Image 1 (cartoon, helix red, strand yellow):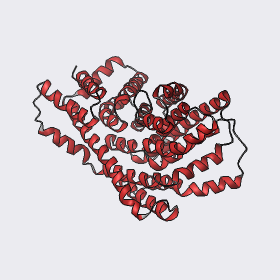
Image 2 (image 1 turned 135 degrees about the horizontal axis):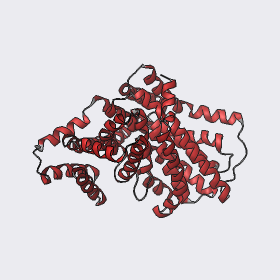
Image 3 (image 1 turned 30 degrees about the vertical axis):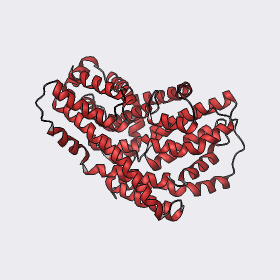
Length: 427
């Protein structure tokens, strides 16, 4: 009953438009007062500070700044050019270019919102000119932008690794195969759409020389995730140190190789990264307060008892995880949703002998879907704004794309080898 009251109150505040930080803190205080609990309110302050003080979280603003460096220059344009050279000749080719561009740029930025904004401003005008509807272009961009969450530099992966104690080395590789499979599924939808509507019949095959030139232009940016992941995997540097390496590499590429930004641009980019990081850390701290209350009130134990009564099989537990995260993700962003639910699901996953790295990919894939689920969602709103399309029209265009990602989610959930094969191969 306690946990039900907590989530009902929180959802009511979220639906009323209360900012997420205040909704989390209000729920925490209201439950302490309303339930007559003996916890001093000063403890909320301590829980807030404790939520944001772990040293590993310093990597979050560093990765955000690295993404700012590369996303505000011509990196996105070069990646789109490379993807167009590879796939532009196929039916539905521009749709495939969008998917491939988001996949590659996601490996650089680690942010779904940055991925959607940077690639969308380049590909949506091209898609509309080719004959795609604005609704489908926006829907595809909203879905493809979330591929960043499954790529090696994913910030949710970093936070989950901290919460669960699993190796960031393994998490950084576990999402790569699911990301590629999701990209292939979206590409198939694009080919079918291009053939069915006749809006994008494709063109001539690009020469090998042109592909090589496009690769050379995009290569330095695409090398960044390889350097970061390789350094983490080989033990040359830790995930926190990897964030610093990403910043230094991003500075070098943007300032001296591409010449996309100048020294004068750095204060503006630092301020933008600081603002984004401040919002993220405030939400993490507020989530830590509610997570602390759920922990001290033994909600995890109560939930474990309920799950054991309902789910007698591993597959049933995983289905419950998927359903609960898809619902929760509609209301709150991936990071706070991850921090709120991971402490509850981790002990249960251990009881069902589920690999915790596998669970992390499942949770992140669920929360990625929530980013473009109507009526709210981060990438959904960004794509709608760029394409100048209505949410209703985009929602209809989302049906085949969401069906494809839902099928992939079920494959990820019930085929653990998809997430464990690559980490085991490189172990």
